[in-house]
Image 1 (cartoon, helix red, strand yellow):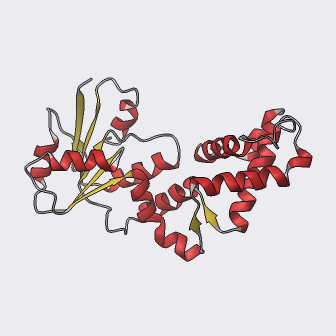
Image 2 (cartoon, rainbow, N blue to C red):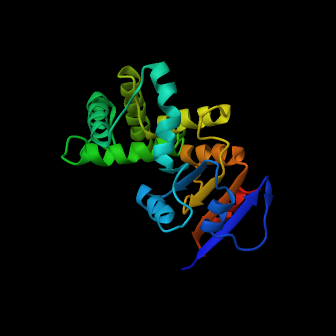
Image 3 (tube, rainbow, N blue to C red):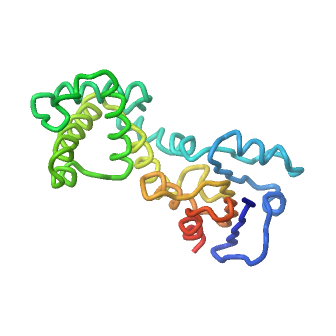
Length: 231
């Protein structure tokens, strides 16, 4: 599928096609923030243009979140938890809650459970699902509620921040609007807001951008959410 550019300048949608080269050229001499699905994609985009890369900050949303959240994490004495660390925390959560589990009791001690649990808890926290909401579902939901509580307790006790916490802190910082990468012209390359903390961060960054060019694949079902950034 082809690319589908959408442009906003000074809070208003601009009709007609605007390509990346034109957007970067229009903002030559000023800093620009490029957010792409991967850093390699951002590098390839800028490398293929004749506008140069001086002043062009190329990041993924996760890289931006880390940059925005660094000071807040330091103030709170938090450290980021890597994926293997998440599995270790999930294993500890399963062990501490083992006597209370019913639905997962037959498999909680089996190899691979901690990895699957870490992935599930990661998704639940990104989606903002609370233990109380899980408990209402009964069965597996009740067990997941207890496991999520144990996991969050481990995070708090060890002063660790997972991806959900990282994006939440970054969104708070972006809302304050004081970070050096905020209020810059913004080019989004296949980066759409999700209904989770990463989406809230992207909306906060977009809200402060004086102009935005969003490029996505034509027909992408997330384009309606992307268009909402330009309203």
